[in-house]
Structure formats: C-alpha cells, structure tokens
Amino acid sequence: MNTFQLKIIASNKVFFDGQAQSLTIPRLDGGSEAYLAMHENCVVPIEFGEMKIVDAEGKTINAFVGSGFLEFLDNEAMLVCISAELPEEINERRAKEAQLRAEEELRQKHSLLEYYHSQANLSRAMERLKVKSRYTM
Image (cartoon, rainbow, N blue to C red; front, side):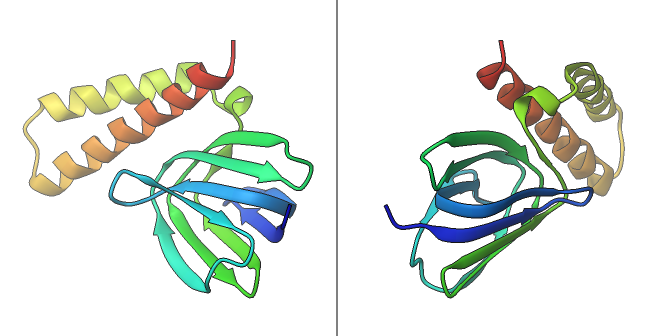
C-alpha cells in the first residue's frame, strides 16, 4: 500500500513521526476527513476530537487530538496541534472534573464570550472521555 511521511507535533511532544497509510482527523464542521498517500497539497484547520492513524505496517492508532492545523505538501503531512493523547494517556478523573466545571459555568449567567468558552471546554472534556471509553477497558 502507498504511504506518506507523517509528523504530528503536539505542544508538549512529537506524537508520531513516520510513514502512514492514512490519517483521519476531525473537521471544524463536526465531521471527519481522511488523507491518503498522494493527497493534493492543502492546509486545513482541525478541531479537537478523535484521530485515527494507520501506520505503514497497517497498525491502527486511535487518539484524541486538540485543535490545530494539517499541512499536506508533496506527499508529506505535518499536523501541529495543542494536544495529542492515546486513550491510555487520558486522565479520566481530570476530564470528568473539567466536564463538571464546564457544566457549572454554563449554568451561570456570563457574557456570550464566556458562554462559548465554557461550551468549548465541555465539548473537549466529553470528547476526551469518549475516546478514553471507546479504546480502553
């Protein structure tokens, strides 16, 4: 199968650096988009959510990815994001606490900006919990 060079850089680490058969990332509109070898050149924003990598050997890596952007240029992809975590790296207690905090903030009367910020925090916490529960036992 055809592969492409993929490097995923999170704010605190290099999450992946190697050959990949495919990369599926969350889109801003709530869907997801897959990239294969020889994809056309592009730069796209990504939203936090579930990411899936199929490496050169066919192994699937599922992870949570924070917002950022993907650059695909000449069969090389670089994804720069706030965070990238394997399901076993997600701290379930912290994610649940963040969810509860965001839910409480949403119940309080705030400005529209604070409301959207709390809503984003809640969505991010819930997405982390979803990835954690889907891929760990």
